[in-house]
Length: 307
Image (tube, rainbow, N blue to C red; front, side, top):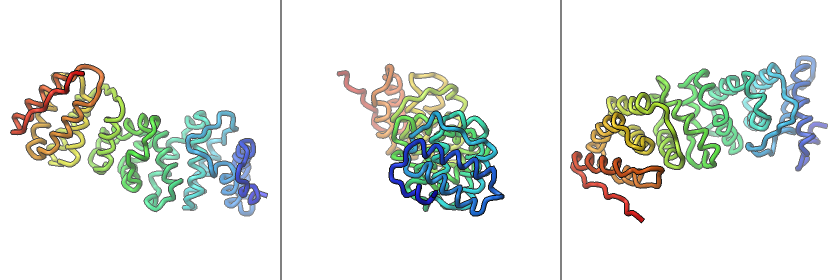
């Protein structure tokens, strides 16, 4: 019967929800069922194969946490990419009431152990990225930052993967959490520093304590002479640290000058960041950046024309 149901092209929601309830029954009696793994995988397929990750159920009967742990162990240990995608779809589809029962930590623990995501199907990769965004940084911090950054390196998340508004809102704080963690800025690869900059340019970000975190990271990168990542981070700093704050701009000015002497070509990128539409008057930032360019031996930045 299960196999026949997987062949339905347009399975109704009530059938999908009922199949998800079967997962609890299967897990409860798993040791007494012949081919329990096969039945569980078929029930997950009936429930979640073919759904959009953004789809949500609000009235589905939640699977008990102990059963979800059992399912997660069985599914991830199988190494079957499509079944893993079904389980991630289950987490994404069911209402947030299930996500507060220790499930985020459980999901994060299993995700950081995935090895072959660079060969994953488009569906699995999309669901992994969606799940990471929903979880946020904290569960992955508990699971291990180095393991998480290794997972990101295997995924190589780009701006097209997180282009919708909800994903941008989730992924920028998540990546900032990685960078701000003690070892995160050392292990996060350059492409994801670029992603931070791209996400900050396309959205609005309010930082509680930019002096403590962002400028401290700039200094560390400068000391390491890590010019690639420092370039992204200085551009990020100019992108968000507005309106002017004297103590912030003093440190930003020094690091920017150091970077411009190493890479004068980024002056144009910084100029474009400062001239993009923004809330408030940025003329003081433009004036300061012009002075920094002069000290670096470069031409001054022009003021944007007033419409």
